[in-house]
Image 1 (cartoon, one colour):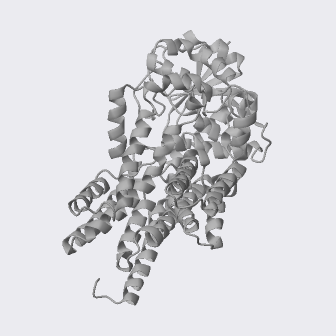
Image 2 (image 1 turned 120 degrees about the horizontal axis):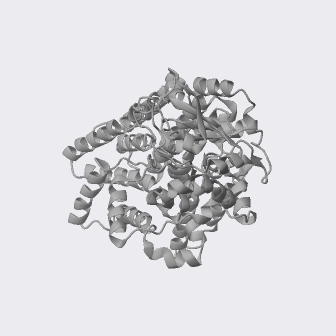
Image 3 (image 1 turned 120 degrees about the vertical axis):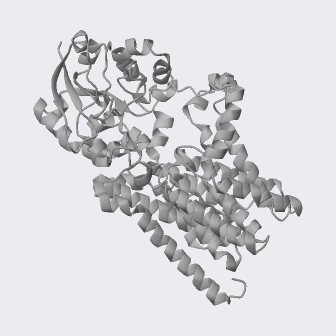
Length: 564
């Protein structure tokens, strides 16, 4: 491109920019084309959040008070605050649209602003050369296509956009767009799932400027305070729960410091190379080698000073992986015993900064390697294309094509048949599930004693534990999982362990279980939806009423009635 004129270079970059946007539309198109036949992530998505939005919408408590509860879940002991703020963009989308349309729109919004944010950040502050538009567009597109936790929205992928605004303000720019950006992002992101860590990092950045003699920069400091304040106002339910709700909850028994030194070191490198399920950077195959390779010309040319940002980001990237891993090191125990909030708040999530850092490193590495000559330039173009191809393979429709589709997972026709068969108003009895997620029953309007939430009263956890106490005593891992976390308040069965997706073609049977069905009955439990046949149902005061199957469902449900 060296022989191209400036207008030609700008025109090429504009074409690449709009081509990338079209690519993002194509990437998310399966949600709109396939609708409920689309395949999407199950973990922390179909098994929880998507059902929560529907339950919340139908509860009439979307705008309920901070003391309101959700009647459909765990006998009304689940606080309305457990479902987050009504000012969250994804909640509003689910109020306005059917679940899959809302989901697709959220994916589109998130990926578009991820692309735009990274592009603006690179163009303004990191890759300024006019003839490197292909780097800016290419790396921004790869960043925008990374897998992310869907209900997190812009919690991680919005960080480049926020950093762009902060750096502009830090440099003295007075444009209102920077402040508008900082005010709007909190409506489509979560402070506890990303921006607490980002904003505290900005605080350290501001402090380092002060220490290095760059002045107090009160506008930069106020910008950090401003965005933090907006987040706290938007997520006022979280603030209320933290400051004023003193009822012991399931988070109070969360215990994280368990790993040995060796396992912490191993997890450090695992996270550094592979990343984490909630922030899947997919960087190990092409990006990581590229960033390490770019170190060689920097070291060979002693370019430490010129590439200071590149070196610092490398160090931070590794430190964040180490921090994540060592947060689970058992050496923390004395501190967690003294300061309880170290257990209830997951400080390991500083590693949520890594997607932004890794893709900034990718761009800076390419910039460094391009200067090594034309061969490197062609190689770097190949690396961007190769990374795009890898990320296409992580499109949910491709990645989860062997999992149940949205329609197969929630099986609305099948569960409607079950409700009709039972023939009573759903609010008059309680159910629980074995071998499938309770979110499925919740999505279909059933009132459940089981749930997946990490913020509910400890008294209820103990009450529910009576139902499964014999099963937990026979399985050390299940006992530890429930007692020291309890987010999955499920009917755990020793024979099947932590498996909650037994499809209709499963040959598995439950030979021997021992449930306290008296405790279940006392709590209002009348029916159990099991994905597997129970051989000793009579020993548990259970009667098989009917088996339900549906062409549109992934499950075969055995409906057991409690006979007491």
